[in-house]
Length: 220
Image 1 (cartoon, helix red, strand yellow):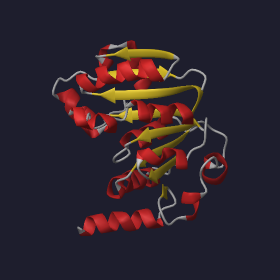
Image 2 (cartoon, one colour):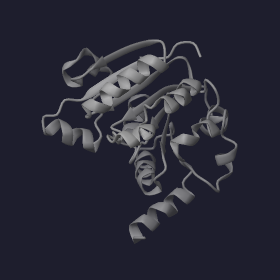
Image 3 (cartoon, one colour):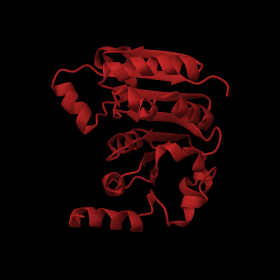
C-alpha cells in the first residue's frame, strides 16, 4: 500500500465526515441521519458509487439546505471527497464507506429524498448484469429507501446501460420518468447546475453525448 493511500485511510479514521466500520455511528445511524449526524430535518440525497465525491460536494455547495451523502466502498476515493468538503467548510456532507448491496443496513424505509447514480461502471457483459446499479435487485432497494415521490437520477455515457436502465426502471420503479440521450442540449440540463465529474468532462470534451434519466417513484 502506498504512503498516499495510508494517509487517506488515516484521514477517514479521524474525520467526522466519514462513517466507516469501527466508528460508533456506523452501527446506529440507520433512521437517524437527520438527528444524529446532520442535526436538522432537511432532505437527504445520496450519490451512489460516488468515487471522489465530486458530485456530492458540488451538489452540497449548490444546495446548503439539503443533506448529501456519498456512498462508496473505496476508502482512498472517498477520502478525497471528504477533504474537499472540509476545505470548503461544508456541514451538509457525509461519506459512507460501504458496499451498495448493504444500503438497507444504513437507511430506513422512506428516509431518502433523492438518489444520484453518476457514470457507474456499465458492466457490459451478460454475466455482469446483476452488478449493474440499475438491475432490478438494486432498484428494489432504492424504491424501499426513497420516500414516495422521491427521485432517482442516472447519468451515463453508455448507450447500452442507458437503454437497459430505461427498461428496468419503467418496469420496477413506478411513477413518472423523463429521459434524454443528449443532456446538454435538453431542457433537463437545467437541473444539473453545471456540475461535471472529471470523467464527465472528459467525455464531453471528446464529443460524447450524455444520457440522463429522472424517475419519480410511485407509492411504495
